[in-house]
Length: 387
Image 1 (cartoon, rainbow, N blue to C red):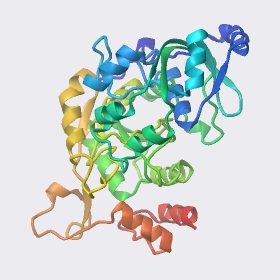
Image 2 (image 1 turned 90 degrees about the vertical axis):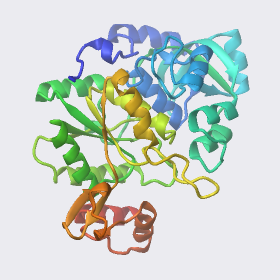
Image 3 (image 1 turned 30 degrees about the vertical axis):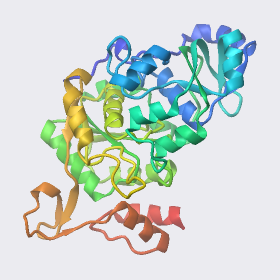
């Protein structure tokens, strides 16, 4: 597979430069809505083409189809509903005047929504459809029930500008910009790695193997939007990634940030992540154990089977246009003095592992993080973050 470089592959919803002043004047006379952090993430990926083929927020029929079948009404594959949640008063106003200026927290207008649909949300139905559970221990379910506005708006967007980010501008590439970079570097096969945690030695080994086995180069594409509550913040994570880049072979890897608000929806989210990476020009996508899983439920059981995400994406990868690269959990082999997939460890093989929970405990207590697990400069970055 080769990344597509035509505009149809990543259609931006931003109006041409010469039309933006007129659109801003139009927005000044409209009621406005200041978006929260999750809404800003969704808007940015709608505007920059990361959520292609969406041309705006889902209307009711598309939303309903996504919940039931992971498809839009026209049959296009899309597993996560993207609608704009609002208060009852905003919903009532929209029915009288169906246009809304969307702003960031500082009051900068980013887009105009031409609303076509408004409806009261059914959070239980959405939670069951997307997450497969109503358990409040699931962060996606909890966000729906506690922080989401009770009404949804759907409609087309006309974008004025993307949200501004003061941090790491060199890594904040739109799909079109990243595709252009790949083309300039002569990269035709790109394997993407989704991350919401700092990278350690196991991740470097995993991504290097994935690239080698598929004749590809590597895109490290960490989430710089919302992840699971309690995660290391993206500032610390990006600094860790910068250290890790030095441990890859020259010209084999690049780093870019993804302004995504994760839902932690397990299998559906893995499919979503793959579709997004196709829009960014990738040909392959790594899916490991419990991809985008939120951990355990109220009974202490995992919300999703560890390899359910791989199974779902395998079913749809041909339609997605991106090839899945499945990986088992990587563990450190004392016998081989290096990392191996767990299914390659002999029956009596000796292994070392540090769980995410254990790592957080070590960071909190100031305990030394061993070099077999991570690089000294990454360990130092994590110590500074937790101090």
